[in-house]
Length: 608
Image (cartoon, rainbow, N blue to C red):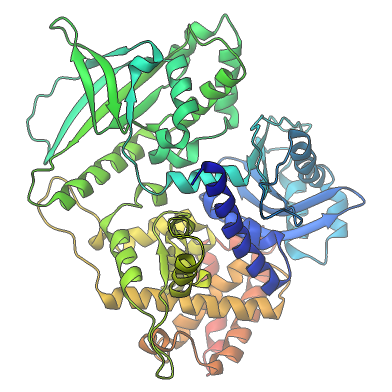
């Protein structure tokens, strides 16, 4: 299957899921944005809503304020409803700029929209928040999220008076497709540097110890010519940065603007190596030749070379390369770690797990300038792999004596479900797969983390977003995955009960979500869901049978009135207790959860 056909099938599968969800709630833009946000993977969870004013040419679909970085993210959706299923819809730079400008207009006209939008709590709250912080804001990031393909990938520039940094990030379907491909595990590939008419040389770091914990580690330091790196990125794309999936495709942020400016200035190019921190890379093996009995080694070829830190540096260099900026005088500081797998060991699986953990640690410790996500680093842990295995083997209990027909599908890597579909022949094979694994039963690792945390009494953590919830989720379950390389103790394995309970927590969250959506509460839906689930378990855990939920795949209808009452109380609590504070930010504080329990438990404890 050629790449166009692969992209087309991926696109249609993705859009089918969005349209299905859109039909259920009466909106396309919101479910589309919610489907894209896990790929963007911000540490906090954005507030999602829809606000549009066609006369003023203003639109906004969500926002996220970071107090730590003093930055504001604005999300605006471009959704083409008339796309042809046999072609890939395109979007131009001009169209992207216009979509981004709609979000900019909301920011610059916040005062008028604060009055206009009183009927929508999130919008009014954001408008007021902008008025409060706009003089101190250091950065505004506008995310254009489109269901079209922005193939030119040209940077879009906008300016807002008084804001030092304004960045426009385009999240199109081509980017989502490539991220999905990248996350499906490293595929072995060979890079022969002779094809690029040059080699590069590095110094080998001496090893004073032979204890490499079942792995042969060789480390080299030196520099790589920028034009080689740019050509490699042009040819291999996401393959080259699979271990750092958030960092490719677009140069972004103030740091990357500095990179671009340095590369454009002829007088600055030879100083690039002094200004830039360089890249950290790993490979499985290589043809590496010692030069004249020295400590210098010529890198002739590498197998599965990966940039684990420096993906954005690479993307910036590639952008300059595509814009015909001369790179002959530019060099990038580089570290290369060769991790040899001992395939002769009795337990090859353990060797690969150790390799994954070693690379994850290299990635985590190297990524200090542009933070990489925990959920990306830990995707290959045995813990998540075990959850994945159970999801492929455990059938949903049959109902009313019927034959077992379906299973929940756990996505250890984002987009894994659609990739699995794409590996099967169109028609009967794909239809059978979808029957066993229905779209509505697909769960990502961030999903299960948020559901787990809500159920176990951490709604404030779930409100912080998927990455924060995932970090806490992994910490609470560290006995199942954390493997100290200095110890011989084996990690524990999860059992079927752990898996079925995990799914039951998801069922509870989905049940509460459906009730909250039908209530049409005006504001803060995600926070209301997390807090409602936590309060239900806090007050009624002795009356909730987790085994029953797994066997029946639902809660009994008698819980509906209880959930409705708690959800309404939750919204009242969030609004009242926040006072003059931003409600979304307040919901992320443990104090918000503590006060909710103290003030509302007595009035809500006798609903059942």
